[in-house]
Image (cartoon, rainbow, N blue to C red; front, side, top):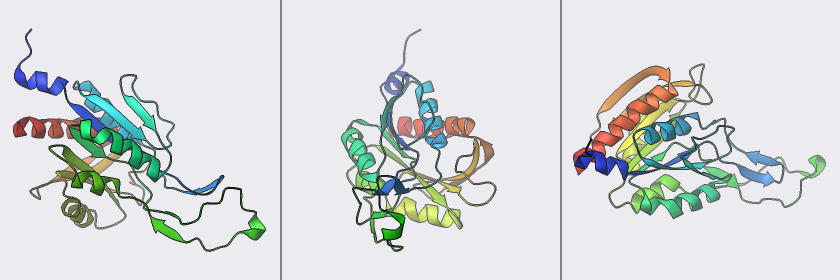
Length: 225
């Protein structure tokens, strides 16, 4: 069977995904992080692979195993994730930022383990680099998708993120309570597009959700061509 223009274009698509948490070290054995497992990002990588896309996956620490065809770039800190994304971004057609990047890091990182009786109980923090905002500011024609993990007012804060970071889509999800998105195999989200249209996805498995989201992003890219 022949391959039409749209199918040919889809085969050439390159998707860059960030997933999982990052860690910001206080000393060699202590760090600041969060409960992200990377499950949503890995599910999106698999769904993108299923429709013929090439997938680069920049992942923080995670026990998950990516499909063999996905190119995985393991990182730990926010700076490491920034540098990996920075190197891969210009070649991608779709950027999906699901990683739960730590927003702050200790100003001072100790080279040796700090003894308990010598440690200060106050840690001075500084912001980490904003990967999504930086990439969005330099985008050409990439489709930009962000995730907003919120403890309350999910739709409000997701909309603010969409506008502030000039995204095409933002996916908002709840990270507190029994239905937290973190580490669960299923999720419920709100998808908001650049026009402000909201779509609610009821709780379902992350792999099924990933396929629905990737289909929407694929159709958006096709319609823009």
